[in-house]
Figure 1 (spheres, rainbow, N blue to C red):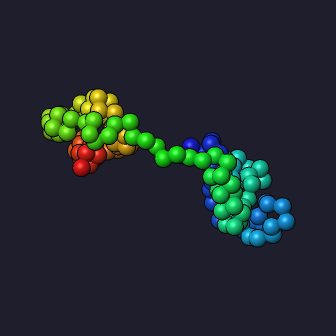
Figure 2: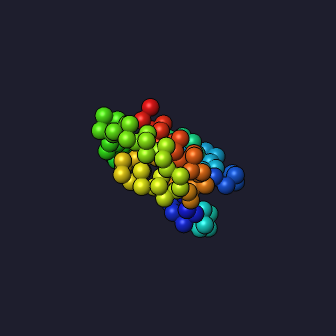
Figure 3: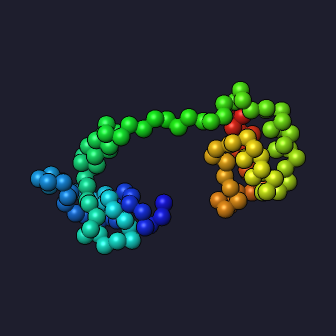
Length: 124
């Protein structure tokens, strides 16, 4: 995650929880790691758990549904295309054509072979 986005992070400093009247020691911060720590909200584990529970209750998250089921994929065609792929561009075309999710990219540092292996794992 980028440092200029709101996130949960640790700094290792001991502070008191920012939650009203909690008084527990806390090391978790909610805010931006690139901002001054005095503008972050500091939480103990108990209050963090309560916050997470509250978020789940107010904003229920459905499991992401994969747009393509294994039944929709031509496994033989996909396997042949993967076997024939020699470059990152060819692997990118396969990923786009079949609408595959979670395949590492060249910018992630993955090799062509690692990307091909990841594609084949999606249809196992």
